[in-house]
Amino acid sequence: LLEKMSPYQSGGDMIRSVTFEKTTYNALPYKFEAGTPNVAGTIGLGVAIRYLNTIGLKNIAQHEKELIETLAETLSKIPKLKIVGTPQERAGAVSFVLEGAHPHDVGTVLDREGIAIRAGHHCAMPLMQRLGVPATCRASVALYNTKEEIEVLSQGIQKAVEVLC
Image 1: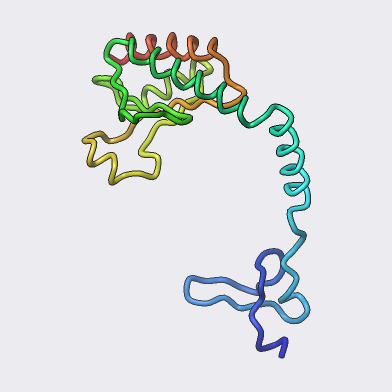
Image 2: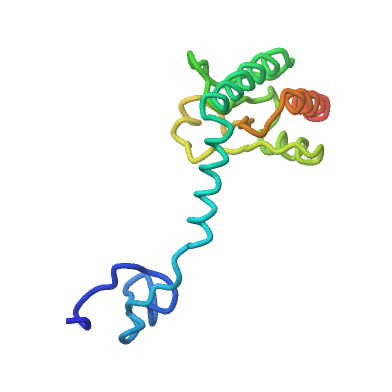
C-alpha cells in the first residue's frame, strides 16, 4: 500500500529525481520524509501576531491611513510626477511615473539615495498595457514608516526629476 501511495508532502529527501516529464519518488520510508516543518516560522508568526495585537490593529490602520494620505498629497506636488490610479480610498501604496523617465531608472536613482521603492510591472502586465506604460514606481507605507521618511522620498524623487527629466 505504501509503495502505491503518493506522498502527501514534498521537500527534503522524498524525491529520487525530478524532470519536466516525470518525478520519481525515493524508496520507502524516505518517500514520506518531506523534511522538518517550518517550526521557526510558526513561532515567529505567533510573536508577530502578539506584537500587532499589543499595538492594536485600529491604531495601525489609523497610522497607515494618515501616512498614505500624506504620501499621496506629497507626491501630487512634485512636478513631472503623475500618480497612477485615483481610488476613493488608498491602502498601503501609491503608484507613479515620472514624465520622460523609465521607472527602473527612477528606482536606481532612489536606491543610490538609500530609498527603497518597487519599480516594474508588478506582475500586472495587462494593467500596464491598459495604462499605456511599460511599468510604474510604487512607494509603500506600513506600521514602521514615518512622515519624515515620506519627506525623504519626496526629496529623492525631486533629485530623480533633476537627473532623469
